[in-house]
Image (cartoon, rainbow, N blue to C red; front, top):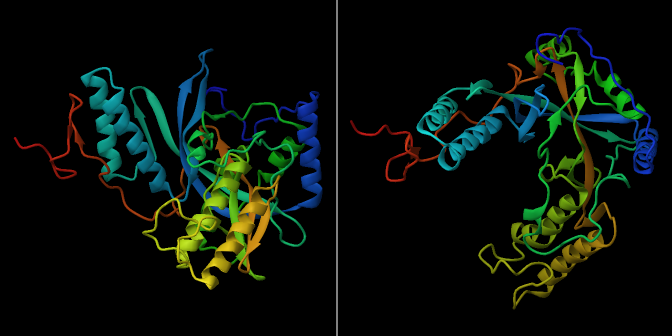
Length: 371
């Protein structure tokens, strides 16, 4: 659908009944999940960047180029800033192309820019709502049997560098066919808006306004993260989003065996990186060795098969299945709302790059060349 004929306030949903065995299994998993985890917990907004280009048939489309995982709009703007800077440094074919990219960098260094056009391509900071399904006991949904998993998990150091990135190459297509349960979820979430006295007035107003300005929603692929809680307290996020459940498990393995021992003073921060709960330093006290053993045993349990929850030192760690939705309007995906806040202001992120492609490391960031 082009911008010119994007008319009705709600797009029809195209439903395709699963016929292939894998599709049918995924739909059966979704039905089981809907029956066992019937409530939703909304965590809040996440931000990324999408670009609008044309596909091989000449149709305009939105495609994610900065993963929609950032906690505030400025983090997404900073990622776009870096994308343009490195493209100017490494990929520009001419001074004119480099000049256009550096002009975009200059704007992103000083302005709260949520949309701009560079070399004929439109870029937009986009906003998604993150949520998770929970059961009647408040337990967050874990990965489903048909969620992608490697046949042989790789636990070696650096294995994460070869894992897929969240939203890598994701095309945002509100017209794509959906399974019956996906269609039902999408329609059910169209009126989703914040409510209750816990939200500031501007947040409630912006949320209600978004339902009118962006009346449709697009469901993004599931992602995975670590959540944790101590005792009977609430679950809280313990990691960023990962593309697969095994990536989240690998992150948890590192947290349990490397990070937690150092955070708790069981292993010095300046110890050899190879030392962890499985390989403690020489001279570790008996008490510290016992605590390290608890972390190592929890990590080993988590490695064994498709395990999604372990406990160590009174804290439960769970691999959770996260969902995200983008609100969609006649002009495409929703951008940041006026009430969305950022943790920091725009800033210069990289050394000065001139139109010839030379990097000036000896100049203070943001300085203009001497005349």
